[in-house]
Length: 191
Ligand SMILES: [Zn+2]
Image (cartoon, rainbow, N blue to C red; front, side):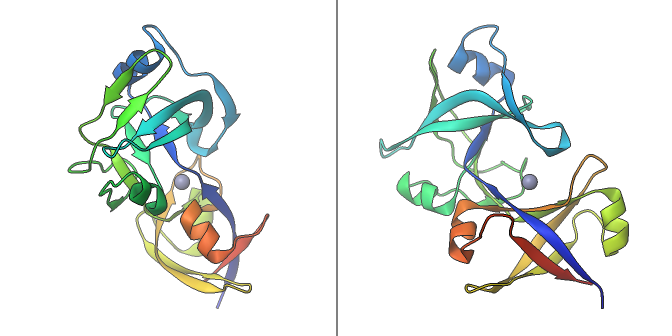
């Protein structure tokens, strides 16, 4: 049996915007301003928006990730969806058909989405080379072991393989808190 360690990355709530929504929120001709490079050509932008739920509750300063996408997508934790009283389902990024919308407020305007709110499924990014080592392929589902005081096994972890990816497990803030994830924590995969 082979034993691999995978670094853990925690995804805080964030938003991907389409061009039309960017221009409503930040003004005509607006562009995103990258402040931090993420894997796979993505980046954290300086731009942030406020999310307003149907119950009027707000979550402020939600980070926008670039580059722009074809559809606006809001990735929340389960705790966020309860706070906003939104029935957002667990989905893979990009799969937003039939998901609830929400209102986004930016410095120049606001937009009410008809869909786009999801709780992202836990997933692990890996390069093509990692995938060969692990003997895995894109879209496989694996189990990973967390060690430590709140040790647990995470099942149904989606494998995402791309040449531009670096090895990292992505979980949301609820999962990280439940597992009491520490800085530089890694998780174990046994093949
Ligand atoms: Zn990810």
